[in-house]
Image (cartoon, rainbow, N blue to C red; front, side, top):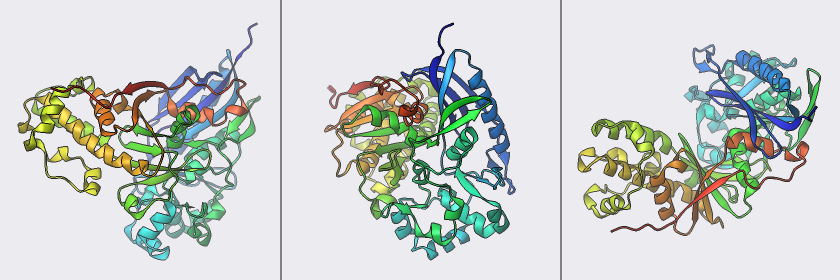
Length: 464
């Protein structure tokens, strides 16, 4: 009978899709499964994750994982979206809904909080957390304390969602810095500890012990023993394959609805100006700060493509594979009539200049679409430059949707002529990163050097 292949199982909880994967020792995916779970509502009627459905799905997935006859599951780990707490009692059962991070935060309570702890600017500077309401997950606990004191008393532990999933697969409670460090308003980045308000409000008593991201717990499920990781915030997990693969300083632009520039080689404190421009800090899996900036460019791209397609009577799918035309770019750059007045940086980072452009000025949809990408690159350059300042990074990697956009990639290379610019791709970067975090606990092979595919884009192109 052939020996079973050693694998690691990863559970990855997204807002829409819940997935699990098996990876072999070379980090090649050998099995995957996916499910969408319907949402429920909280006591205020706001949509939220259905915790009971999620718990049952995790349990069912673990049964499926250990039924795989060809594989020997050595370890399990998990990743999930951030800014979300699961409140459990002393018996480990949830005592409240998993409140949605988009749930409106009471203005009066928010004012009370910032008035008490130094004002918005000072507090945001200390915690590297822009004022984001419920997206500052620490304030969710503050809200429970003041609006639902009886619930607050019931809470034994407040676990960020990745650590709740870890609790389900390991039976142990813990806290993790990648979750704590993600605009939660919990962590004082200057002092490298919880902010004073966490102690003063008694919040710290509800938080489990912080455990390093590479630590594992010996766990058993239905007679199967394995090493269980403590869980990771998904954005931090997605950065790990690049940190493992490349030692030379780089910036990763992770593109999707948001285009997030992450610089793991920039640990300088956030300035007030950077905070105003939507910079923040994450904490990487090794515990070091990662400066990040973001623009809502993926969302704007989707909206403006619809506007272009409707005006020129085209289908939106046409622009997914549109080729880069340097002559069109040259024409647009020479035509002063297409260039609006220069926007200030803060406003331009919120919305590109394309939103103010009338489509009648363009000869065809190819021109209009190239102008859209030109304007998005103007945005992207300003945003990425915020995390490049005062660092030695020499390369930019782009993953996600825009990495497949030839116009975006060519113009980005021109925008950063002093950098090497690459489109990067790795299958399921978040899941692979989650597995790599506990590599030494289950894998007998050396760390892989082929998990990321790169395509280089030159900083020059020929124009007439």
